[in-house]
Length: 449
Figure 1 (cartoon, one colour):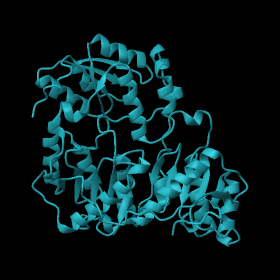
Figure 2: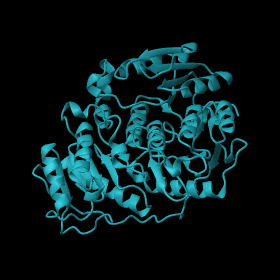
Figure 3: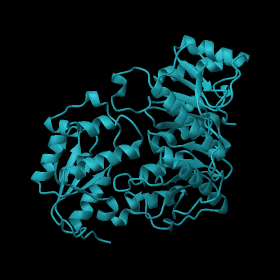
Figure 4: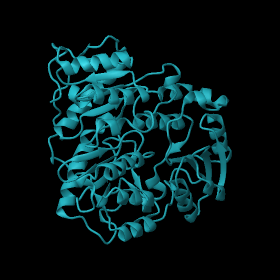
């Protein structure tokens, strides 16, 4: 299928290019259809291949440069494509145009990726551009319904994908990641703010270090990628490519599941050929998959938190703790995960079955310059004290990772006996690490089992 334009604007197509090969595939689709293209590449993200087209490289803070380059090229329609890590707003180079976007820029410090992208879209629309989706320009990249290669999923694979799809739908209101790894018996990992690659890296490490039976090729574990309910699909369609296939194979997974018509297959021919060669299936499923497969009702979360340790949690940390407790309640209803990290009213990391220490490892939680104002932010929210550790050594190991991640403290969503020896160990360790500890207010009721 060839792109013929939306009918509203037939001038040059503007592409705001971030990382990956997707911007170039979009440019090629438009040029093949006879349309001129102008690419504005984000410095440090855009691939060198954009040099084959009319283009300009700008720093992410040079908003004026972005707008003027697109207007000088005569662009009215704009596609925003590629991966973009959240930069520190106080370490970017800005121009006069940045101040036109200052309200949008400051609003990016809170919320999840989808809410951030919606604000970006609204900004460009206010500047007179029509933001269009990749599916409008390159519909051939959309995943079809059914198997893409020669390998088809088994009934066990279908049960695994159903489990993961149901969880991803239930987590949609928390603006968490778009992916999960599951076997037919349990959720193994949930994508956080760092994306699919980091989730799969954690799964691969667990397979190598723990020899996890659920992560052997015969286990039937699968990767599922689906858009969140109500997601801004013009700028954030889930995508897979050859790298995804390679990582899934390294993790011992049996296949990859994507949303038919609402996910992209980048470098399609190469991706499918590689999956066939490595023995993985790729299959597109419709949006109803997973409906009613698992309990959708969340368990009760605390209505309020109280201070347990000697350090106080701020208002923003208490809001983060409430959000984390609500996310844990949904996870518990699906038999998945007993810990999350929340920062800036955004669930950033989710523990599946790989362990809290693995979840806390790696890079710090993502932010947009917030730590310039405050060194420690965000909360580790757990279902019970025992999830942190069962003795002084294991508790201290987890708190060391919490400190390394620059989080401000810990919230326990389930009931806490503050006089119990384990709770006392936690409080003393938290005091040493200068972390707050909060738990449910006895009068609030609820909790996570």
